[in-house]
Image 1 (cartoon, helix red, strand yellow):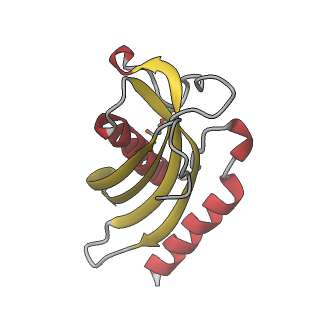
Image 2 (cartoon, helix red, strand yellow):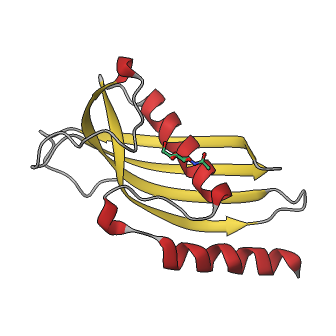
Length: 139
Ligand SMILES: *[C@@H]1O[C@H](CO)[C@@H](O)[C@H](O)[C@H]1NC(C)=O
C-alpha cells in the first residue's frame, strides 16, 4: 500500500514539475533528480566525445519498488553537445549548448536503483548520433 502511494506521489510530482522551457530537464523529487543526475554523469563518462553533453529532454518511463524497498527508476533521455570540454569538469546542466542548429546528440536509456537516498545501481546505454548522421530516428 505504501509503495503504491509513493509511486503515485512520484508520478504526480513529475507530471507537474517537468519544466521543458528551461531546456534542461530536472526533477522536483530529490531522489529522482539524484538518479537522473547520476545518469547524466555516467552518460558523459561513457560517450566517446571531447565535449560535455547536456540533456534537452528526458522521460521517466518506469518507477517500481522491489521487495528490498529500493526505488527502481528507468529514464530515457536525449542529450546535445555543449561548449564545455570534458576536461573542464563543468556541470552538464549549466553548460551552454553548442550553437543554435543541429549538433551532435546522444540518446540514452538508464536503469537506476536508489536505496536509502543513494544511487546503488546504474546501468546505462547511450548511442552517439553525430551531426553527419542522416538517420536520427534510430535509438
Ligand atoms: C542535480 O544536479 C543539479 C545541477 O548540477 C544540482 O543543482 C542538483 O542539486 C542535483 N540534485 C541532486 C539531488 O543532487
